[in-house]
Image 1: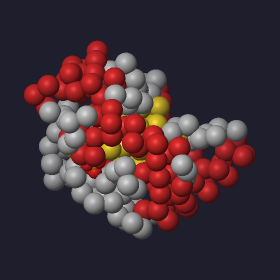
Image 2: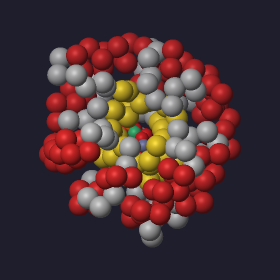
Image 3: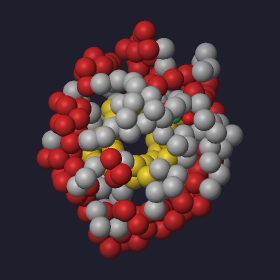
Amino acid sequence: MTTYRIAPSILSADCARLGEEVSAVIAAGADLIHFDVMDNHYVPNLTFGPMVCAAVKPYASVPVDVHLMVEPVDDLIQAFAKAGADIITFHPEASRHVDRSLSLIKDAGCQAGLVLNPATSVSVLENVLDRLDMVLLMSVNPGFGGQSFIAHTLEKIRCVRALLDEYEAKSGRRIALEVDGGIKTDNIAAVAAAGADTFVAGSAIFNQPDYKAVIDAMRRELAKV
Ligand code: DX5
Ligand code: ZN
């Protein structure tokens, strides 16, 4: 049985009350806190740095899942590991030496993952599977919350699921498969059926007054898969 995890993205939270928002969404059933780091260089938006991560860390009784949309990545990997990140993912296009960046994450004691944009080929995973704890597939182009899910991602999820299952059969090691962008109550079951086990949701949760109602509804959908 797959264990499904819901990872609310605090990009859509009330940034004036981030600590409270993190506590509230965990009380509502969040399994991870997804922390979107944008640098106005790799993506056309600017969000949170390590200082903010360290500030919300005391409120996070679940793992902090740091999604780096920055270029270059290596210095920020170290800074976010110090700031309390539990999982750090980055985009391979933003690192000159992907294997080295993954090693930096592991050496800092965090779980490591690669993020694939909608147009990024799955082949970037092939030579680094041993270093990965997570693959994050973008179902929107990175940079903003509230965009629509790109339907073609479902096919890509199936393809990566097959690759990760084959790897698990050989190595005995399971790599998580997370999907990020445009996930709502009405499409989460399809994303899970395609093979994802971890679901980022920003606007779907934080734009509603009752976070628990949304997370419970998502879990009811996942129970049908
Ligand atoms: C986009 C971010 C996402 C985003 C998801 O670049 O990586 O995590 O916050 O937001 P929604 O769920 O609103 O699409
Ligand atoms: Zn993200």
